[in-house]
Length: 144
Image 1: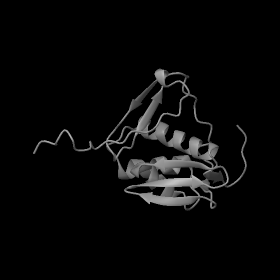
Image 2: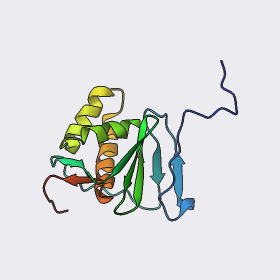
Image 3: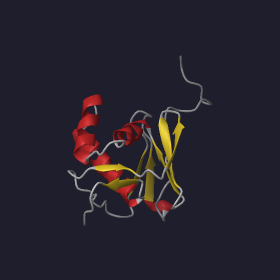
Image 4: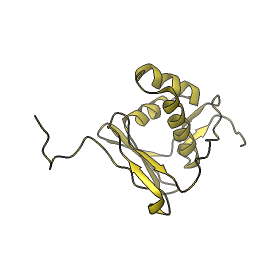
């Protein structure tokens, strides 16, 4: 059966975080992989979260289920973050102290079809962004 042109596609778009939207390309991917946003206005910075340092959830966050994903709200900063299904899986891991390396290994175990380099870069970026937004905290301080 062919999908109707009026039915919603199995993709989710993420809002741009860039200041100059003309420099950005929004890409969508199937829900199980989650949305991806690529900004070409700045060179991609290598995430600065150590791969062997355990992180855990910030207990002050509000967490809401959205379909297969989650919505995280930091009442202290007013910031919110939507996680797709795969990133929500990482969030569940973070109930206990979890390193970037452990999260990568867990994702590779449940989704061996995903490219290892993509899993590594996406997971490093997720930890970096969640840490920057104070949604996860390290078990011990570190400097970059």
